[in-house]
Every structure is written in structure tokens, then in C-alpha cells.
Image 1 (cartoon, one colour):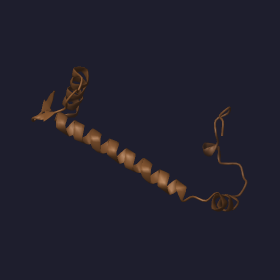
Image 2 (tube, rainbow, N blue to C red):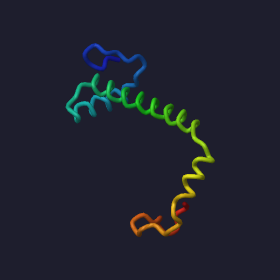
Image 3 (tube, rainbow, N blue to C red):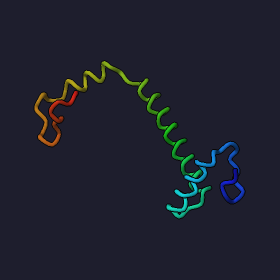
Length: 88
């Protein structure tokens, strides 16, 4: 299926192409720009997830507990409190 400007997406369902075409029209961009932007966002999200997983592996429960122990045990300001019935 052609997305415009010669870009072909094998196996792209017609319904998805119609939705992409309409969204591109609403955004006043080409379907190619829409696809490129969506792909860039997905790649960025995946890369961020990988970074956060690697960063989390460097974490230390001991250091976390030590840092948390320095926080005063006081009630939060009203605007920072959890809603009644919420699970902390």
C-alpha cells in the first residue's frame, strides 16, 4: 500500500491507512511525516525504557534507605496529600 510520495508499507491494513491519511490531513502534514514522527517517538520511548532499566540496575537499596532516613517524618502540605481512600 502506498502512503504517498512513493512510500510503501507492505501489509498495512486499509483501515489503518485511512486513519493515518485522515490524521495527517488534520495535522496538515504528509503521511510520510506522520509515519516518521510516530516511528521516532516509538524508538525514543524504547530507548528511554532501556536506559531506565540499566539505571535501575545501578541502584542500591542501602543507599536509598540511607537517603530516605534523612527525610523528616512530617505530614505533607495539603496539596501534596493523597486523596482519601487511595493506596500509597
